[in-house]
Amino acid sequence: YTAETRTDSSGHYSLQALPSNYILSLYGTNFHGNPLLPGSYFLRTLTNSLSLAQNTVLDLQVPAKRLSIHVQDPAGNSVANTEVTVDTGVTNPNLTLGTFPASGSSVGSGRTDLSGNAALSLFPTPPNSGYSIRAVPPANSSFATTLLNNVVVTNDTSVTITLTTAITLSGQVTDSAGNGLEEQNIQIRTLDD
Image 1 (tube, rainbow, N blue to C red):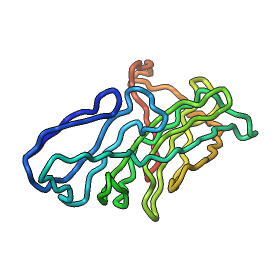
Image 2 (cartoon, helix red, strand yellow):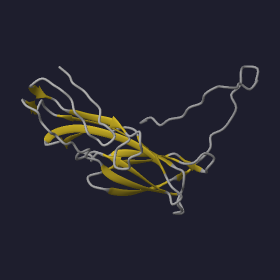
Image 3 (cartoon, helix red, strand yellow):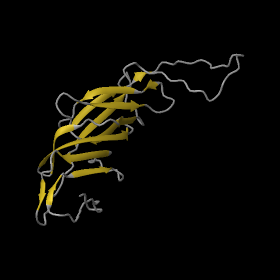
Image 4 (cartoon, one colour):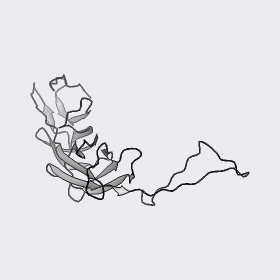
C-alpha cells in the first residue's frame, strides 16, 4: 500500500492512509530557488519505522547544510558568472527524517555573482566521503572547467575553487580527399572519468 501527497505553498501536507507501519520518504526539486533547499533531494527512513494507528502530526525538516563557494582565477581574482554544480549525490545513511533514522542524497547548482561567490544547500556527507564540485567558467574565458573533489560537508562549509588556465587542442577533420568535414564530434577524456 502506498499513499502520496505534495506540500502546499506553506509546506503543509496531509494524506490518508491505512493503519500500518510505513517507510517514510521525502523528496523534491527546488523549483522556487529557496536558498536553504537542495536543487534536488531524496530522503527515506531506513526501516518501516513510521507506525500509524491514529491521526498523527509529523513535522519534517530537510537536513541541508550551506556550502559557500568562492571561484577565483590563478591570480586570486574573483570570477563571476561561473556555473558551480554538484550533480552526483553522495548517499548518507546517517541522516534523520522526523525522528527516524534515514538515508538520503542531494544535488544542486548555482552561478557565481560579481564577487565570485555562490552557495548551494546539500545534505551532510557521511564519514570518508565527499562531494565533487564542477566549476564551468563563462564562455570564451581563458579558463578550463575545474573539478574540486572530496568536499566534506558536515556543517555549513566554505570552499575556494581556483580555475585552471585552459590549453587548446585544435585541428581539422577531413575526408580521404582532404575536404573539411562539418558537424563531426571530437571528445577527449581522462581514463578515470
